[in-house]
Length: 113
Length: 113
Image (cartoon, rainbow over all chains, first blue to last red; front, side):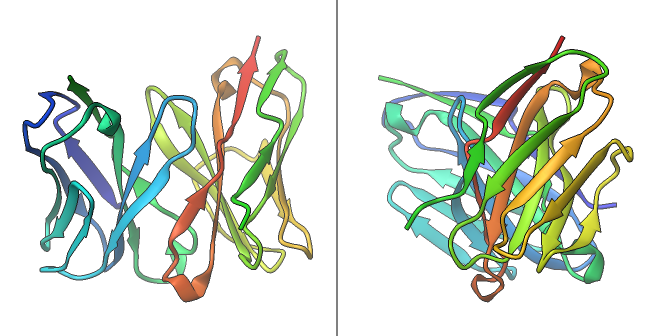
């Protein structure tokens, strides 16, 4: 069974204090690993997708990396508007994975001014 | 380009009733997936439809069902509602050519009293 574990559950940062969120996964043949951001009362917003170990993607203050067992979401010099829940999800290979993402529980990030 | 639209945004029902939720995908997207989000279980996959066919199903009881129409719009139905069905129901659409990146709607908040 596919599993995704995110840590920490919650992270409080001061504005400008860089840090990383972790996503550990076990999956039968990784088709893709996805990072989403979710604000209260809204649906998840797509951030990145990674497909193979060693791949990296960047967007503004965020950078996602992937190894064979985990992914990191690095946040550089965060701002209060980066406060949200960050979700990691995997899609397995094979026919049984059609349209199915397996999500972690998320990391609640709070950035104080 | 319009995003994924879910209606209604909020619903209040009583135990034993049934409910139908609607999802309009992004134009051109033919795959629609449904998820249930609760504080305890996080985001859990319900089912996926592509070209009016259910291709995948999660571990939910038969009270949860869905369908997709020829214009790719999708509905999900929950019969004989239970208190535990209270959740945020999220719909996501994807374009296979975009390597299955799922874009989410804002969700329907269902409260069962």
